[in-house]
Length: 85
Image (cartoon, rainbow, N blue to C red; front, side, top):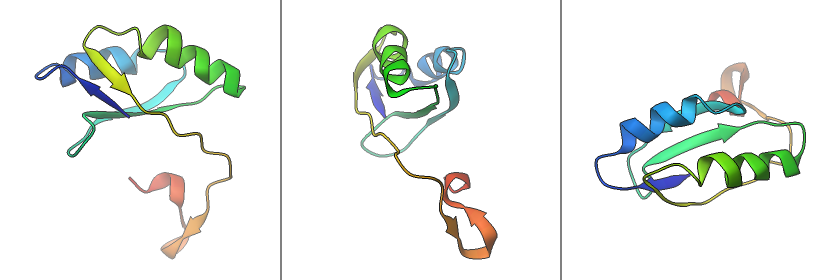
């Protein structure tokens, strides 16, 4: 999750979507301007993507990261939790 300089969300979104390891990225309403899902082979690789690519983007003011450590759970109707936005 991240905050950007005002009015730069779409610019940052386009750059996020071009970073290897970023599998989803979206503009959001609320306290954060954007949210991105990063997938890599290890936690260290995810941290490197965050440090070297995401936090280094122009207009990114700050980020908050959350590690998902379990498998997606099934929710009502046979939909995996990872499919729910």
